[in-house]
Image (cartoon, rainbow over all chains, first blue to last red; front, side, top):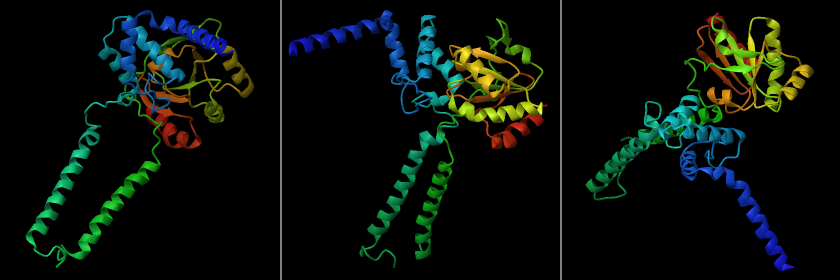
Length: 136
Length: 176
Protein backbone atom coordinates (compact mmCIF):
# COMPACT_ATOMS: atom_id res chain seq x y z
CA UNK A 1 0.00 0.00 0.00
CA UNK A 2 2.74 2.39 1.03
CA UNK A 3 4.72 1.62 -2.09
CA UNK A 4 1.69 2.25 -4.20
CA UNK A 5 1.18 5.63 -2.56
CA UNK A 6 4.79 6.61 -3.14
CA UNK A 7 4.48 5.51 -6.73
CA UNK A 8 1.34 7.61 -7.09
CA UNK A 9 3.13 10.64 -5.68
CA UNK A 10 6.01 10.18 -8.07
CA UNK A 11 3.68 9.86 -11.02
CA UNK A 12 1.82 12.99 -9.94
CA UNK A 13 5.01 15.01 -9.63
CA UNK A 14 6.26 14.03 -13.05
CA UNK A 15 2.89 14.99 -14.45
CA UNK A 16 3.29 18.49 -13.03
CA UNK A 17 6.80 18.78 -14.38
CA UNK A 18 5.42 17.91 -17.78
CA UNK A 19 2.81 20.64 -17.61
CA UNK A 20 5.22 23.36 -16.65
CA UNK A 21 7.52 22.66 -19.55
CA UNK A 22 6.21 25.06 -22.23
CA UNK A 23 7.11 28.04 -20.02
CA UNK A 24 10.77 27.09 -19.97
CA UNK A 25 11.19 27.11 -23.73
CA UNK A 26 13.91 29.70 -23.49
CA UNK A 27 15.65 29.37 -20.12
CA UNK A 28 17.68 32.58 -20.52
CA UNK A 29 14.59 34.63 -21.26
CA UNK A 30 12.66 33.02 -18.41
CA UNK A 31 15.50 33.83 -16.01
CA UNK A 32 15.41 37.46 -17.16
CA UNK A 33 11.64 37.54 -16.76
CA UNK A 34 11.90 36.07 -13.28
CA UNK A 35 14.61 38.47 -12.16
CA UNK A 36 12.68 41.44 -13.49
CA UNK A 37 9.27 40.46 -12.21
CA UNK A 38 10.70 40.11 -8.71
CA UNK A 39 11.46 43.83 -8.84
CA UNK A 40 7.98 44.80 -10.00
CA UNK A 41 4.83 45.24 -7.99
CA UNK A 42 1.56 43.60 -8.89
CA UNK A 43 -0.98 46.42 -8.84
CA UNK A 44 -3.88 44.19 -7.94
CA UNK A 45 -2.35 42.63 -4.83
CA UNK A 46 0.06 45.34 -3.95
CA UNK A 47 2.19 43.46 -1.48
CA UNK A 48 3.11 40.81 -4.00
CA UNK A 49 5.66 40.99 -6.74
CA UNK A 50 4.73 40.36 -10.31
CA UNK A 51 6.62 37.09 -10.01
CA UNK A 52 4.58 35.84 -7.05
CA UNK A 53 1.16 37.06 -8.00
CA UNK A 54 -1.37 34.88 -9.73
CA UNK A 55 -3.76 37.75 -10.37
CA UNK A 56 -4.95 37.79 -13.99
CA UNK A 57 -3.32 41.18 -14.56
CA UNK A 58 0.01 39.85 -13.30
CA UNK A 59 -0.26 36.97 -15.73
CA UNK A 60 -1.04 39.36 -18.57
CA UNK A 61 1.88 41.59 -17.64
CA UNK A 62 4.28 38.66 -17.44
CA UNK A 63 3.11 37.58 -20.87
CA UNK A 64 3.57 41.13 -22.17
CA UNK A 65 7.09 41.31 -20.70
CA UNK A 66 7.93 37.94 -22.22
CA UNK A 67 6.70 39.07 -25.64
CA UNK A 68 8.67 42.29 -25.47
CA UNK A 69 11.83 40.46 -24.39
CA UNK A 70 11.39 38.06 -27.28
CA UNK A 71 11.16 41.07 -29.58
CA UNK A 72 14.62 42.04 -28.40
CA UNK A 73 13.78 44.83 -25.95
CA UNK A 74 16.27 45.49 -23.17
CA UNK A 75 15.29 45.20 -19.51
CA UNK A 76 15.34 48.97 -19.16
CA UNK A 77 13.04 49.43 -22.16
CA UNK A 78 10.51 46.99 -20.73
CA UNK A 79 10.64 48.66 -17.31
CA UNK A 80 10.18 52.09 -18.93
CA UNK A 81 7.18 50.71 -20.79
CA UNK A 82 5.55 49.62 -17.53
CA UNK A 83 6.45 52.79 -15.61
CA UNK A 84 4.93 54.91 -18.40
CA UNK A 85 1.61 53.12 -17.86
CA UNK A 86 1.50 52.32 -14.17
CA UNK A 87 3.85 54.89 -12.66
CA UNK A 88 6.82 54.54 -10.31
CA UNK A 89 4.57 52.52 -8.02
CA UNK A 90 5.26 49.36 -10.03
CA UNK A 91 8.91 49.54 -8.99
CA UNK A 92 9.80 48.01 -5.65
CA UNK A 93 12.90 50.23 -5.62
CA UNK A 94 11.47 53.69 -6.24
CA UNK A 95 13.76 56.02 -8.20
CA UNK A 96 15.09 59.16 -6.54
CA UNK A 97 13.08 62.09 -7.86
CA UNK A 98 11.09 65.09 -6.70
CA UNK A 99 8.14 63.05 -5.46
CA UNK A 100 10.19 60.43 -3.65
CA UNK A 101 12.73 62.83 -2.11
CA UNK A 102 10.99 62.78 1.29
CA UNK A 103 10.89 58.99 1.20
CA UNK A 104 14.61 58.71 0.47
CA UNK A 105 15.98 61.52 2.59
CA UNK A 106 13.32 61.90 5.31
CA UNK A 107 14.91 59.26 7.57
CA UNK A 108 18.33 60.94 7.35
CA UNK A 109 16.69 64.26 8.14
CA UNK A 110 15.08 62.74 11.25
CA UNK A 111 18.41 61.14 12.19
CA UNK A 112 20.13 64.53 12.03
CA UNK A 113 17.44 66.12 14.22
CA UNK A 114 17.66 63.22 16.67
CA UNK A 115 21.46 63.47 16.74
CA UNK A 116 21.27 67.19 17.36
CA UNK A 117 18.81 66.77 20.25
CA UNK A 118 20.95 64.00 21.74
CA UNK A 119 24.04 66.18 21.46
CA UNK A 120 22.31 69.09 23.21
CA UNK A 121 21.03 66.89 26.04
CA UNK A 122 24.40 65.19 26.58
CA UNK A 123 26.25 68.50 26.52
CA UNK A 124 23.90 69.92 29.11
CA UNK A 125 24.43 66.95 31.40
CA UNK A 126 28.21 67.09 30.97
CA UNK A 127 28.15 70.74 31.98
CA UNK A 128 26.33 70.20 35.28
CA UNK A 129 27.64 68.12 38.18
CA UNK A 130 24.18 67.37 39.42
CA UNK A 131 22.45 64.98 37.01
CA UNK A 132 19.01 65.59 38.46
CA UNK A 133 19.30 69.34 38.43
CA UNK A 134 18.59 69.82 34.74
CA UNK A 135 15.55 72.01 35.21
CA UNK A 136 17.18 74.36 37.65
CA UNK B 1 14.27 76.18 28.43
CA UNK B 2 11.19 76.76 30.46
CA UNK B 3 8.96 73.98 31.66
CA UNK B 4 6.18 75.21 29.40
CA UNK B 5 8.22 74.88 26.20
CA UNK B 6 9.43 71.43 27.22
CA UNK B 7 5.85 70.39 27.57
CA UNK B 8 4.78 71.98 24.29
CA UNK B 9 7.43 70.39 22.03
CA UNK B 10 6.29 66.78 22.51
CA UNK B 11 2.68 67.93 22.23
CA UNK B 12 3.42 69.67 18.93
CA UNK B 13 5.23 66.58 17.60
CA UNK B 14 2.32 64.45 18.72
CA UNK B 15 -0.18 66.69 16.95
CA UNK B 16 1.87 66.61 13.74
CA UNK B 17 1.92 62.81 13.88
CA UNK B 18 -1.84 62.80 14.50
CA UNK B 19 -2.30 65.06 11.49
CA UNK B 20 -0.40 62.67 9.20
CA UNK B 21 -2.21 59.63 10.56
CA UNK B 22 -5.57 61.33 10.19
CA UNK B 23 -4.80 62.15 6.57
CA UNK B 24 -3.73 58.55 6.11
CA UNK B 25 -7.19 57.36 7.11
CA UNK B 26 -8.59 58.90 3.95
CA UNK B 27 -5.93 57.68 1.53
CA UNK B 28 -6.70 54.59 -0.49
CA UNK B 29 -3.53 52.64 -1.32
CA UNK B 30 -5.42 51.16 -4.23
CA UNK B 31 -5.70 54.53 -5.90
CA UNK B 32 -2.39 54.76 -7.67
CA UNK B 33 -2.07 58.09 -9.47
CA UNK B 34 -1.85 57.42 -13.17
CA UNK B 35 1.18 58.80 -15.02
CA UNK B 36 -1.06 58.98 -18.10
CA UNK B 37 -3.09 61.94 -16.83
CA UNK B 38 -2.01 64.96 -18.88
CA UNK B 39 -0.62 62.77 -21.64
CA UNK B 40 -2.06 61.70 -24.98
CA UNK B 41 -4.42 58.76 -24.61
CA UNK B 42 -3.03 55.65 -26.30
CA UNK B 43 -4.85 55.11 -29.58
CA UNK B 44 -6.40 51.77 -30.25
CA UNK B 45 -8.59 49.95 -32.71
CA UNK B 46 -10.86 47.25 -31.43
CA UNK B 47 -13.89 45.28 -32.54
CA UNK B 48 -17.22 46.82 -31.56
CA UNK B 49 -19.44 44.75 -29.27
CA UNK B 50 -22.37 43.57 -31.37
CA UNK B 51 -20.90 45.51 -34.29
CA UNK B 52 -20.78 42.58 -36.72
CA UNK B 53 -17.08 42.88 -37.40
CA UNK B 54 -16.89 46.69 -37.37
CA UNK B 55 -14.02 48.28 -35.46
CA UNK B 56 -13.83 51.28 -33.19
CA UNK B 57 -10.88 53.59 -33.76
CA UNK B 58 -10.09 55.89 -30.85
CA UNK B 59 -8.36 58.30 -33.25
CA UNK B 60 -11.81 59.13 -34.68
CA UNK B 61 -12.72 60.70 -31.33
CA UNK B 62 -10.44 63.71 -31.92
CA UNK B 63 -12.41 66.92 -31.61
CA UNK B 64 -14.80 65.75 -28.94
CA UNK B 65 -14.71 65.29 -25.22
CA UNK B 66 -15.47 61.71 -24.26
CA UNK B 67 -15.37 59.25 -21.41
CA UNK B 68 -13.76 55.86 -21.78
CA UNK B 69 -15.26 53.53 -19.20
CA UNK B 70 -13.41 50.24 -18.74
CA UNK B 71 -15.79 47.56 -17.51
CA UNK B 72 -16.57 43.87 -17.65
CA UNK B 73 -19.52 41.59 -17.06
CA UNK B 74 -17.57 39.75 -14.32
CA UNK B 75 -16.91 42.94 -12.36
CA UNK B 76 -19.14 43.50 -9.36
CA UNK B 77 -18.28 47.16 -8.82
CA UNK B 78 -19.25 47.81 -12.46
CA UNK B 79 -22.77 46.73 -11.61
CA UNK B 80 -22.84 49.29 -8.77
CA UNK B 81 -21.62 51.93 -11.18
CA UNK B 82 -24.08 51.05 -13.92
CA UNK B 83 -27.05 53.16 -12.70
CA UNK B 84 -24.79 56.24 -12.53
CA UNK B 85 -23.67 55.65 -16.12
CA UNK B 86 -27.30 55.24 -17.16
CA UNK B 87 -28.20 58.55 -15.50
CA UNK B 88 -25.26 60.22 -17.27
CA UNK B 89 -26.45 58.85 -20.59
CA UNK B 90 -29.96 60.18 -19.98
CA UNK B 91 -28.71 63.74 -19.63
CA UNK B 92 -27.45 63.54 -23.22
CA UNK B 93 -24.51 65.75 -22.23
CA UNK B 94 -21.86 63.12 -21.71
CA UNK B 95 -20.51 60.80 -24.40
CA UNK B 96 -19.54 57.58 -22.66
CA UNK B 97 -17.73 54.90 -24.62
CA UNK B 98 -17.17 51.48 -23.12
CA UNK B 99 -14.16 49.22 -23.21
CA UNK B 100 -15.18 45.68 -22.39
CA UNK B 101 -12.10 44.36 -20.62
CA UNK B 102 -11.15 40.67 -20.65
CA UNK B 103 -14.68 39.52 -21.25
CA UNK B 104 -16.67 37.47 -23.69
CA UNK B 105 -19.01 39.27 -26.10
CA UNK B 106 -21.96 37.05 -25.15
CA UNK B 107 -21.70 37.75 -21.42
CA UNK B 108 -21.13 41.48 -21.92
CA UNK B 109 -24.08 41.71 -24.30
CA UNK B 110 -26.27 39.84 -21.80
CA UNK B 111 -25.47 42.41 -19.07
CA UNK B 112 -26.30 45.32 -21.38
CA UNK B 113 -29.51 43.65 -22.54
CA UNK B 114 -30.62 43.04 -18.96
CA UNK B 115 -29.63 46.36 -17.37
CA UNK B 116 -29.58 48.83 -20.24
CA UNK B 117 -26.76 50.17 -22.36
CA UNK B 118 -25.27 53.50 -21.26
CA UNK B 119 -22.59 53.47 -23.97
CA UNK B 120 -22.50 55.07 -27.40
CA UNK B 121 -20.20 52.27 -28.50
CA UNK B 122 -18.53 49.43 -26.64
CA UNK B 123 -15.11 48.36 -27.91
CA UNK B 124 -13.89 44.96 -26.84
CA UNK B 125 -10.52 44.13 -25.32
CA UNK B 126 -10.73 40.37 -24.90
CA UNK B 127 -7.04 39.78 -24.12
CA UNK B 128 -6.54 42.92 -22.03
CA UNK B 129 -3.87 44.44 -24.31
CA UNK B 130 -5.59 47.81 -24.57
CA UNK B 131 -6.09 47.72 -20.82
CA UNK B 132 -2.34 47.41 -20.30
CA UNK B 133 -1.76 50.36 -22.64
CA UNK B 134 -4.09 52.45 -20.50
CA UNK B 135 -2.56 51.24 -17.24
CA UNK B 136 -5.78 49.54 -16.16
CA UNK B 137 -5.31 47.41 -13.05
CA UNK B 138 -8.80 47.12 -11.66
CA UNK B 139 -12.13 47.65 -13.31
CA UNK B 140 -14.10 49.85 -13.41
CA UNK B 141 -11.83 52.69 -14.45
CA UNK B 142 -12.87 55.74 -16.36
CA UNK B 143 -10.81 58.19 -18.40
CA UNK B 144 -11.94 61.68 -19.36
CA UNK B 145 -10.34 62.51 -22.70
CA UNK B 146 -10.39 66.01 -24.15
CA UNK B 147 -10.78 67.27 -27.72
CA UNK B 148 -7.08 66.97 -28.45
CA UNK B 149 -6.97 63.39 -27.20
CA UNK B 150 -5.27 64.14 -23.87
CA UNK B 151 -6.37 62.22 -20.75
CA UNK B 152 -7.54 64.86 -18.28
CA UNK B 153 -8.80 62.71 -15.45
CA UNK B 154 -8.80 59.08 -14.39
CA UNK B 155 -11.38 57.66 -12.04
CA UNK B 156 -10.19 54.47 -10.37
CA UNK B 157 -13.13 52.45 -9.13
CA UNK B 158 -16.78 53.18 -9.78
CA UNK B 159 -18.06 56.65 -10.61
CA UNK B 160 -20.31 57.61 -7.74
CA UNK B 161 -22.83 60.45 -7.74
CA UNK B 162 -20.36 62.44 -5.68
CA UNK B 163 -17.49 61.90 -8.11
CA UNK B 164 -19.77 62.77 -10.99
CA UNK B 165 -20.94 66.04 -9.44
CA UNK B 166 -17.71 67.24 -7.88
CA UNK B 167 -15.15 66.08 -10.44
CA UNK B 168 -16.46 64.92 -13.80
CA UNK B 169 -19.26 67.42 -14.49
CA UNK B 170 -17.15 70.51 -13.65
CA UNK B 171 -14.26 69.12 -15.72
CA UNK B 172 -16.52 68.44 -18.71
CA UNK B 173 -17.92 71.99 -18.50
CA UNK B 174 -14.41 73.33 -18.56
CA UNK B 175 -13.39 71.15 -21.51
CA UNK B 176 -16.41 71.76 -23.73
